[in-house]
Amino acid sequence: MGIYVHIPFCRSKCFYCGFYSVASLQRKEEYVRALCREVELRREYLPSRQADTLYFGGGTPSYLEVNELERIVREVESCWTFSPDSERTLEANPEDVTVEKLRFWKEVGFNRLSIGVQSFDDKVLKQINRTHSARRAEEAVCRAADCGFENIGIDLIIGLPGSTSSDVEHHLKILENLPVSHVSVYLLSIDSNTVFERLAARGKFVPLDDDCLAEQYLLVSDYLKHIGFEHYEISNFAKERKYSKHNTSYWMQRPYLGLGAAAHSYDGDSRQWNAAHLKKYMDALQENRLYFEREELSDRDKYNECIMTRLRTMWGLDIKRLEREYAVYWNRVKHKLPVWRESGLLEIENNIIRLSPRGWLVSDGIFSELFI
Image 1 (cartoon, rainbow, N blue to C red):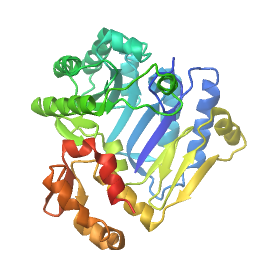
Image 2: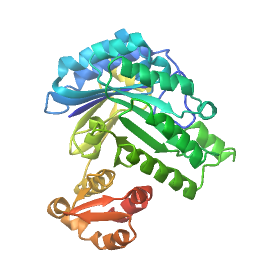
Image 3: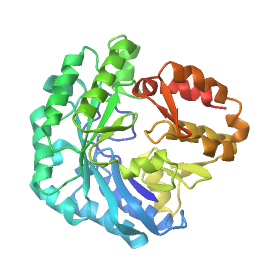
Image 4: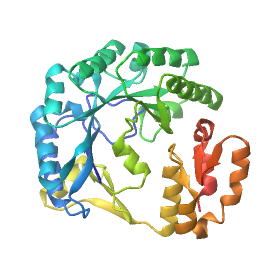
């Protein structure tokens, strides 16, 4: 199983970010206490006491003081044991990647970093309200490698207004010369409750059209594959099979536990999610209770999730599994496959359905056609 820990604190709110976070440290100490209490209360959520992955996301987990981070990690370790080859990921902003912190992160057990680069262009970084420079991002990656991290991932955003394929290629050429083994590339979307959503509503933010987005996405896919990366999920690329084990467990529908405000959990039969509200989350835990919503999954829900998660990946969708577990639903939609196959959006080999990169571009439409 995997364990996810949400740290919602940020120095400032990025204009594109729709994840739950707060640009304040006012209640950080109280939150750490509440989080440790939740660890105790949730230790029975899954039957297994063995964990394969630990992922600190946010927000900005690297914003925590070293003693706060260590306290949470040790609390988690007191409830679950980790396999010797477990993956432990920390999301970090470039400005937090100092030699002192890197050494501490290794000491506390983290062996994978996901660094929020987003862009190697200072103008773009300012446009999206990031607080680091392009040079700082490059230095952070190299510094992490110098300190012994062998599994370093970065995030990039494409599709910003005014951006061109030449701009994207510039970022990729910089990336090519960095000690990076994983790249997550996100097409800019306008999420709810973001600055970009408010600007778009006033006509002051106009995203690129679909053709430009497609051109940039396919450029990224081709370029990264040319320099040794596998395109293993819609937005993710890895060298030397250094896939994100934690995120892959989501796409493979494996159980996981989410800790912290707004964190989600899945036990195979239901999903639950904590309150996306700092005060409600902490107030409940001060009273030794959990504040969450829960949804029981029907067979139909499980079928739809299987379609959506497995077709996101290069491992694809097993037709035999669909016929064995979800025949009543699958038999109603499988006649649609030939059209997509003929148009090059998907392939079928050895009873496995896989989307092509062009298929991933229109995956939402394909998913909706296969949903029941």
